[in-house]
Image (cartoon, rainbow, N blue to C red; front, side, top):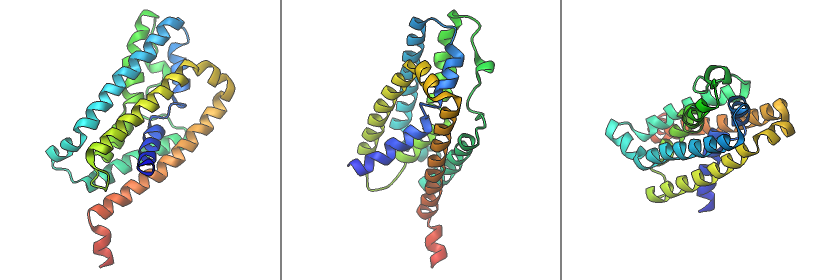
Length: 216
Protein backbone atom coordinates (compact mmCIF):
# COMPACT_ATOMS: atom_id res chain seq x y z
CA UNK A 1 0.00 0.00 0.00
CA UNK A 2 2.74 2.43 1.02
CA UNK A 3 4.87 1.44 -1.98
CA UNK A 4 1.96 2.38 -4.27
CA UNK A 5 1.15 5.61 -2.41
CA UNK A 6 4.64 7.13 -2.26
CA UNK A 7 5.17 7.51 -6.05
CA UNK A 8 1.76 9.18 -6.36
CA UNK A 9 2.45 11.54 -3.46
CA UNK A 10 5.95 12.42 -4.65
CA UNK A 11 4.79 13.07 -8.21
CA UNK A 12 2.08 15.46 -7.03
CA UNK A 13 4.40 17.16 -4.53
CA UNK A 14 7.13 17.72 -7.11
CA UNK A 15 4.73 19.08 -9.73
CA UNK A 16 2.96 21.45 -7.31
CA UNK A 17 6.37 22.49 -5.90
CA UNK A 18 5.36 24.37 -2.70
CA UNK A 19 8.86 25.83 -2.13
CA UNK A 20 8.88 27.28 -5.63
CA UNK A 21 5.73 29.25 -4.79
CA UNK A 22 7.48 31.31 -2.10
CA UNK A 23 9.12 34.05 -4.24
CA UNK A 24 5.98 34.63 -6.32
CA UNK A 25 3.72 34.65 -3.26
CA UNK A 26 5.94 37.18 -1.47
CA UNK A 27 6.10 39.38 -4.56
CA UNK A 28 2.32 39.35 -4.93
CA UNK A 29 1.39 39.89 -1.29
CA UNK A 30 4.23 41.87 0.30
CA UNK A 31 2.08 45.03 0.54
CA UNK A 32 -1.09 43.22 1.66
CA UNK A 33 -2.11 43.12 5.36
CA UNK A 34 -1.46 39.87 7.25
CA UNK A 35 -5.15 39.11 7.81
CA UNK A 36 -5.87 39.41 4.09
CA UNK A 37 -2.87 37.22 3.26
CA UNK A 38 -4.40 34.44 5.38
CA UNK A 39 -7.62 34.78 3.37
CA UNK A 40 -5.70 34.62 0.09
CA UNK A 41 -3.93 31.40 1.11
CA UNK A 42 -7.15 29.77 2.29
CA UNK A 43 -9.08 30.67 -0.87
CA UNK A 44 -6.26 29.59 -3.18
CA UNK A 45 -6.03 26.19 -1.50
CA UNK A 46 -9.81 25.61 -1.50
CA UNK A 47 -10.17 26.60 -5.16
CA UNK A 48 -7.20 24.57 -6.40
CA UNK A 49 -8.24 21.53 -4.36
CA UNK A 50 -11.72 21.74 -5.90
CA UNK A 51 -10.34 21.97 -9.44
CA UNK A 52 -7.99 19.01 -8.97
CA UNK A 53 -10.70 16.97 -7.22
CA UNK A 54 -12.87 17.29 -10.34
CA UNK A 55 -10.07 15.79 -12.46
CA UNK A 56 -9.54 12.99 -9.93
CA UNK A 57 -13.21 12.06 -10.22
CA UNK A 58 -13.59 12.57 -13.98
CA UNK A 59 -10.08 12.09 -15.42
CA UNK A 60 -10.52 8.43 -16.37
CA UNK A 61 -13.91 9.04 -17.98
CA UNK A 62 -12.57 12.12 -19.77
CA UNK A 63 -9.97 9.97 -21.54
CA UNK A 64 -12.63 7.42 -22.44
CA UNK A 65 -14.96 10.15 -23.72
CA UNK A 66 -12.25 11.58 -25.96
CA UNK A 67 -11.21 8.11 -27.11
CA UNK A 68 -7.62 8.64 -25.96
CA UNK A 69 -5.65 5.50 -25.18
CA UNK A 70 -3.98 5.72 -21.73
CA UNK A 71 -0.66 4.83 -23.37
CA UNK A 72 -0.92 7.79 -25.73
CA UNK A 73 -1.76 10.12 -22.86
CA UNK A 74 1.17 8.75 -20.87
CA UNK A 75 3.48 9.80 -23.71
CA UNK A 76 1.85 13.22 -24.17
CA UNK A 77 1.74 13.84 -20.43
CA UNK A 78 5.33 12.70 -19.99
CA UNK A 79 6.50 15.12 -22.68
CA UNK A 80 4.57 17.98 -21.05
CA UNK A 81 6.01 17.20 -17.62
CA UNK A 82 9.50 16.96 -19.14
CA UNK A 83 9.13 20.47 -20.59
CA UNK A 84 8.03 21.74 -17.17
CA UNK A 85 11.03 20.00 -15.58
CA UNK A 86 13.37 21.80 -18.00
CA UNK A 87 11.88 25.14 -16.93
CA UNK A 88 12.58 24.18 -13.31
CA UNK A 89 16.10 22.89 -14.04
CA UNK A 90 17.27 25.91 -16.02
CA UNK A 91 15.40 28.53 -14.03
CA UNK A 92 13.25 29.65 -16.93
CA UNK A 93 9.85 31.11 -16.02
CA UNK A 94 7.20 28.66 -17.21
CA UNK A 95 4.58 30.09 -19.56
CA UNK A 96 1.96 28.61 -17.26
CA UNK A 97 3.28 30.72 -14.41
CA UNK A 98 2.78 34.43 -14.05
CA UNK A 99 5.39 36.82 -12.78
CA UNK A 100 4.79 39.31 -10.01
CA UNK A 101 5.12 42.22 -12.42
CA UNK A 102 2.46 40.84 -14.76
CA UNK A 103 -0.10 39.94 -12.13
CA UNK A 104 0.66 42.13 -9.13
CA UNK A 105 -2.43 43.80 -7.68
CA UNK A 106 -2.54 47.58 -7.49
CA UNK A 107 -4.25 47.71 -4.09
CA UNK A 108 -4.87 45.54 -1.06
CA UNK A 109 -8.57 45.32 -2.00
CA UNK A 110 -7.66 43.80 -5.34
CA UNK A 111 -5.26 41.38 -3.67
CA UNK A 112 -7.93 38.79 -2.92
CA UNK A 113 -8.34 38.14 -6.66
CA UNK A 114 -4.83 36.69 -6.83
CA UNK A 115 -6.09 33.77 -4.76
CA UNK A 116 -7.83 32.64 -7.95
CA UNK A 117 -5.20 33.81 -10.45
CA UNK A 118 -2.33 33.13 -10.41
CA UNK A 119 -2.06 31.26 -7.08
CA UNK A 120 -4.88 28.70 -7.43
CA UNK A 121 -4.75 28.60 -11.23
CA UNK A 122 -2.21 27.95 -12.69
CA UNK A 123 0.32 27.78 -9.83
CA UNK A 124 -1.35 25.10 -7.67
CA UNK A 125 -3.85 23.60 -10.11
CA UNK A 126 -1.92 23.96 -13.34
CA UNK A 127 -1.21 21.86 -16.43
CA UNK A 128 1.41 19.79 -14.61
CA UNK A 129 -0.75 18.77 -11.65
CA UNK A 130 -3.81 18.17 -13.83
CA UNK A 131 -1.79 16.06 -16.28
CA UNK A 132 -0.29 14.02 -13.44
CA UNK A 133 -3.74 13.31 -12.00
CA UNK A 134 -5.15 12.19 -15.35
CA UNK A 135 -2.09 9.98 -15.91
CA UNK A 136 -2.71 8.15 -12.66
CA UNK A 137 -6.51 7.95 -12.89
CA UNK A 138 -6.26 6.71 -16.48
CA UNK A 139 -3.72 4.05 -15.60
CA UNK A 140 -4.69 0.38 -15.97
CA UNK A 141 -2.06 -0.82 -13.52
CA UNK A 142 -2.60 -3.21 -10.60
CA UNK A 143 -3.96 -0.48 -8.30
CA UNK A 144 -7.80 -0.50 -8.35
CA UNK A 145 -9.33 2.77 -9.67
CA UNK A 146 -11.08 3.72 -6.44
CA UNK A 147 -7.92 3.06 -4.42
CA UNK A 148 -5.93 5.24 -6.82
CA UNK A 149 -8.50 8.03 -6.44
CA UNK A 150 -8.30 7.70 -2.66
CA UNK A 151 -4.49 7.92 -2.78
CA UNK A 152 -4.70 11.04 -4.94
CA UNK A 153 -7.17 12.68 -2.55
CA UNK A 154 -4.99 11.86 0.46
CA UNK A 155 -1.93 13.16 -1.39
CA UNK A 156 -3.67 16.44 -2.15
CA UNK A 157 -4.84 16.89 1.45
CA UNK A 158 -1.31 16.34 2.79
CA UNK A 159 0.32 18.49 0.10
CA UNK A 160 -2.08 21.40 0.56
CA UNK A 161 -1.49 21.27 4.32
CA UNK A 162 2.21 21.60 3.51
CA UNK A 163 1.44 24.43 1.06
CA UNK A 164 -0.51 26.26 3.79
CA UNK A 165 2.38 25.91 6.25
CA UNK A 166 4.98 27.02 3.70
CA UNK A 167 3.04 30.06 2.51
CA UNK A 168 2.25 31.11 6.08
CA UNK A 169 5.99 30.90 6.84
CA UNK A 170 7.05 32.25 3.43
CA UNK A 171 8.87 35.31 4.78
CA UNK A 172 10.90 33.17 7.19
CA UNK A 173 11.67 30.55 4.51
CA UNK A 174 12.76 33.26 2.09
CA UNK A 175 15.11 34.76 4.69
CA UNK A 176 16.42 31.31 5.63
CA UNK A 177 17.06 29.92 2.14
CA UNK A 178 17.43 33.11 0.15
CA UNK A 179 16.97 33.26 -3.61
CA UNK A 180 19.91 30.89 -4.11
CA UNK A 181 18.56 28.24 -1.73
CA UNK A 182 15.10 28.33 -3.27
CA UNK A 183 16.66 28.09 -6.74
CA UNK A 184 18.65 25.00 -5.67
CA UNK A 185 15.50 23.33 -4.29
CA UNK A 186 13.61 24.11 -7.49
CA UNK A 187 16.35 22.57 -9.64
CA UNK A 188 16.42 19.41 -7.53
CA UNK A 189 12.65 19.14 -7.96
CA UNK A 190 13.11 19.65 -11.71
CA UNK A 191 15.70 16.87 -11.88
CA UNK A 192 13.37 14.45 -10.09
CA UNK A 193 10.46 15.46 -12.32
CA UNK A 194 12.52 14.94 -15.48
CA UNK A 195 13.23 11.34 -14.46
CA UNK A 196 9.58 10.69 -13.67
CA UNK A 197 8.46 12.23 -16.97
CA UNK A 198 10.78 9.99 -18.99
CA UNK A 199 9.40 7.01 -17.07
CA UNK A 200 5.87 8.08 -18.05
CA UNK A 201 6.90 8.20 -21.72
CA UNK A 202 8.52 4.76 -21.45
CA UNK A 203 5.41 3.32 -19.76
CA UNK A 204 3.25 4.82 -22.51
CA UNK A 205 5.36 3.19 -25.23
CA UNK A 206 5.08 -0.15 -23.42
CA UNK A 207 1.30 0.24 -23.02
CA UNK A 208 0.93 0.90 -26.75
CA UNK A 209 2.90 -2.27 -27.48
CA UNK A 210 5.70 -0.61 -29.45
CA UNK A 211 8.50 -2.13 -27.40
CA UNK A 212 7.00 -5.60 -27.70
CA UNK A 213 6.72 -5.06 -31.44
CA UNK A 214 10.36 -4.00 -31.73
CA UNK A 215 11.52 -6.90 -29.56
CA UNK A 216 9.55 -9.32 -31.68
